[in-house]
Structures are given as C-alpha cells and as structure tokens.
Length: 290
Image (cartoon, rainbow, N blue to C red; front, side):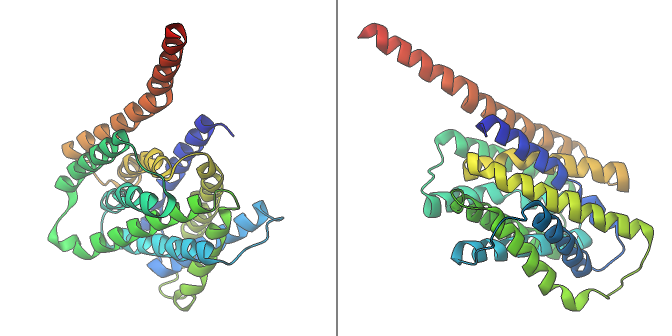
C-alpha cells in the first residue's frame, strides 16, 4: 500500500468516526449499554473480516486493548453528558499526546513542522471551546479528556505492532469493552427500531469497518500522521450534529474548523509534495555540482 493510499483511508476512517457523536445521542440507552453492544457488534464484524488471524495476547495488544476500551467507553459517556462538538474536539487533543508518546515509545521523532501543525490544530480546537465550554459540562469534558488519552494509547499500540497485526488490539479492545459493560445491558434498554438501526450502524460501520481500515492504513504512516489525518472527524462531527440534532455551530466553531482543515491540508501538501520536490531538486543540483 502506498502512503497516499493509507492517508486517504485514514481520512475515510475519520468520516466514519464522525457519525458517532450524533448517533450515540439518538439511541435512548445508557452509555454502557451503547458502548458494550456497539463493541460486541464490531467484534463480530472484525472476526468475520479477519477469519484467518490468530489473536495474540501480549503486552502491546493488551495495552492497546485497554486503551481502546477506555477510549470508546469514555467517548459514549461524555457524549451523553455534553455536546457532540465538545467531546470530539477535546478528544482531538490526542495528537499532542501521540507526538510525545511516539518519541518516547516508538522513536518516531516529530519534525518541527509536525509540532507547528499540532499546535495549530490545538489553536483551531480552542475556537470551538469558546462556543461550547461551561462549568456545567465539567464531567463531560473530563470523560472526553480520558477518551483522548485512550485514543493516544491506541494509536501508539497500533504503531508498535506495525510489523505484525495491529488489528489484534482492536479485536481485544472490543472484547474488553463488551465484557466490561455486561452488567449494564438492561439499564434503560428500550427496544425500538430507531435504536436497533442505530446500534447496528455504530457497530458495523462507525466502529468495526472504520477500525478495520484504520488498523491496516496505520502500518504505512507515522503515529502523528495517523492521528492528524483523521482530524476530519472533529470538523464533520459538529456538522452532522447540527444536521441531525440541531446543535448549532457558532462563528468560533466555523473559524476553528477552517483552521484545522487548512493546517492539515498545508501539512499534507508540504510533506508529500514540496518536501519531496525540494529533495529531488537538491539531488539534481548536487549532481550538476559534482
């Protein structure tokens, strides 16, 4: 797989993930019921898509599985407490944690332009916070931060397994989530078609298929790339929440979303085109000088 293909797949993954915020709110079940059943369905999908795989339990897969479980459980809880925009935007402080952890655990040193992009991304996210944050949403924001830490741990774990089967941690993570949430499955469980369709969509597409794509694409990009290119999610998620739930994006949100998009596009253009072109020109110049 070429790197550009992997980047496109990660962007598609981000779009699929972005449906989670408003879909969680549409389903009138408890957070643990949604998180557990969504992961149970995703687990079945991933097993069907990876029938030949042999699940390996080791420190990397278990760390990844626990990180993944904390990410998806806290994500659903936070979405039930605060707005979808708040949750996804706070979760996308993860690239900063990923950059630090990738340097410590993966020996993938982010270059100066990576750091510039990360802090530009955080600047863009801060505009959303001006619209949405309040003291009343404190617990929702705390759970969103915990979800972002889980996301960072998941990305690092998948990259550590790039030579093997990163999907192992995703499968194990969904198993952990399903088991952890077992005691809560009948809390406020209202059986209706809207809820059933919603949980099937979340399990099959928003979680199962999305992470199947992501776990394959992440083998061909750095950990920072894997978290940054999926950042289409915090832009698309508030838009979908507005379209389906009437959650209104303010002027600051639009400004923040524009900053995020431009920073990612500029970084991609620099890393994939300008940087390669500069190296090629430098090589040609050195050849003539010799």
